[in-house]
Image (cartoon, rainbow, N blue to C red; front, side, top):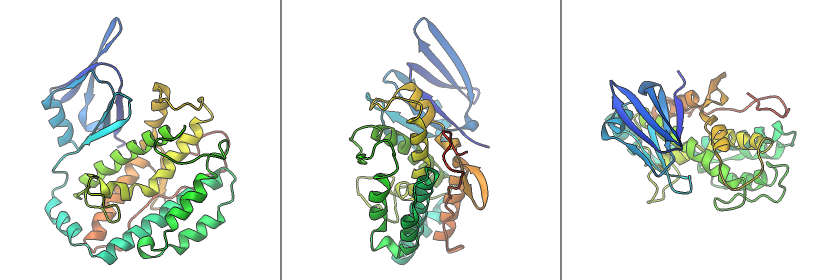
Length: 310
């Protein structure tokens, strides 16, 4: 079942009643009351400074492995809450993850970057941009990406991916659509972190990312091959909306569809949210020595026809 991604952008009061999430939304001259099944929810974004949530509601959401994202006054995600106990074998899997050797972590990173570059190449090919060079680089990635093919491919990719902005520079604080990219990646990060916890893994301990101030290093590692899925959504949004830095409600409606976008994984079409479960479950098995490869998605679709390729 595909879990729901919910966004609350108005003053609201979230509470718990009869194991349901009760949401009272205060709008001008109107108050709405929603009753939501918690088991159907995967991610919640709290995007207003006048949202209140009870401890009971938070506890119930976390017990059901819901990722709670909070946004700042500029409507950008700044924090995330995840459950401490997400899997019955969590202790065993933590130990396997902590015991992972450096060669194993480098092999995981090699697989991760190969999948990322191939998916970036697929985004370009969807736009009828030749990407043979990127596929060659993907095949040449060595253990630990020691020759830094990721950076080389990224520079090549960002110069071409937005065909209407040939001068585009990827910069978190840069011009549009950088803010759209930031928001989409924040949603992806929450989805990945949620499923890492659900697979009994420690989202803080990365295989490549190791910033001591980063609480989600492993999520930042594993989301890399999924980033191009978000990029496709941004490309499609640019055909529908004016290119502005501010993120509007309409932008968010599009970006919140990212977890439901289809990818191919294990040879089958699957919503991204479900595919991530396969990825994190396979990662846990790699740490345990049961399999050798992390299962990542592939992007494969017809050439661009002014519509999403799903």
